[in-house]
Image 1 (cartoon, rainbow, N blue to C red):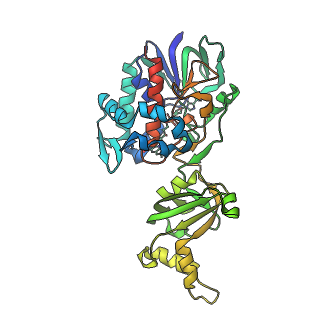
Image 2: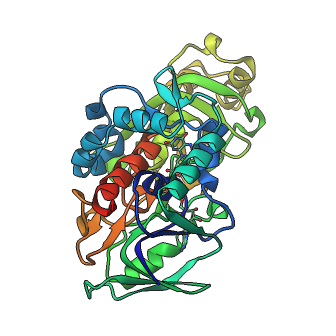
Image 3: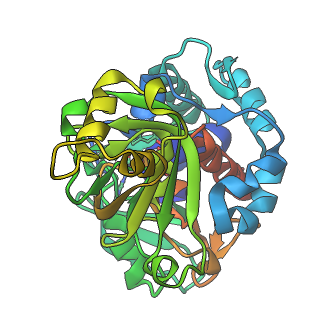
Length: 375
Ligand SMILES: Cc1cc2nc3c(=O)[nH]c(=O)nc-3n(C[C@H](O)[C@H](O)[C@H](O)COP(=O)(O)OP(=O)(O)OC[C@H]3O[C@@H](n4cnc5c(N)ncnc54)[C@H](O)[C@@H]3O)c2cc1C
């Protein structure tokens, strides 16, 4: 049985593609027993679907990848995405500068995508994990997808299998092996937008306390030793957890942190403006051998609280790295070495910062492929 198109992965990007593209005979192969499990976790269950503002300002939110994907983002922008969501029964609301579904329920987005996909002619098969095999990739005569349950032929195949974080949602990185076996480059994979663990963490007792407007700077080994090179710096809320730092400022900087390197925290405020418990912690750390608080040490900690990174938490909101953009024609999202094979969403080497940029990336890349596979 030959399909027009097979989408591997029934997550955010795969479902968006199926909900957009009408086909005669399409198939979604999903490894787990459920669709869109990670999508249901987005925005704390409320699903921050995209960001407000000009799409031109989105490009910088994906670093280097943003420039490579500029056309794809411009052509299928946030405003287009909002109109399309409305058309499939998901009106949105704006809260500060972030969009959410009007019902504020990620499950309503997931269910609307599934309904639209089924209306568009897509069959859904669950518990079908694609094995390290995708055949006939260079023949130009279609592709065969091999799963734990069978073999499926299609004229076109789309990889929408996500990244490596929260593997319990099904995005366990298994598809990257399949891709590497095809001779396609996959860049280094690591959690991003993740909490950071440091050596000798002194704030475990402050777990749950959050400090606003903190600046966190990550230094690479080169930067520390030579004072040259680029340090990554973000300002936002900082959250203490029982075993490390979290909160927006840390999540953003995490992508630039490596174990053994340094982060520096500037609390950007006077001691008296900090929560009492945290103030006490800082004062204790600034005590000399005699037990007196050293004012200069305290001032130093307030402006420059330094830590060596121990590890980046595996539970990142996204994955940094993925199918190399150099392997992809970003005008179509087709893999240059494998005609008929496409890649979208978090599986590609692009990740955005917090604020709805990652679901926007899913939409823009999926809409680009939808143009190619519409019947
Ligand atoms: C806690 C949390 C909160 C988030 N909040 C937001 C937010 O508010 N806004 C935002 O923009 N982004 C958010 N994100 C990021 C966003 O959820 C992801 O970027 C997005 O889900 C990626 O979509 P995807 O389709 O590429 O991958 P996924 O949604 O991960 O879907 C991939 C699918 O492929 C399946 N699969 C994997 N391997 C195989 C295989 N070998 N065979 C068959 N199927 C396979 C998986 O089971 C999964 O269903 C959040 C992420 C997390 C973890």
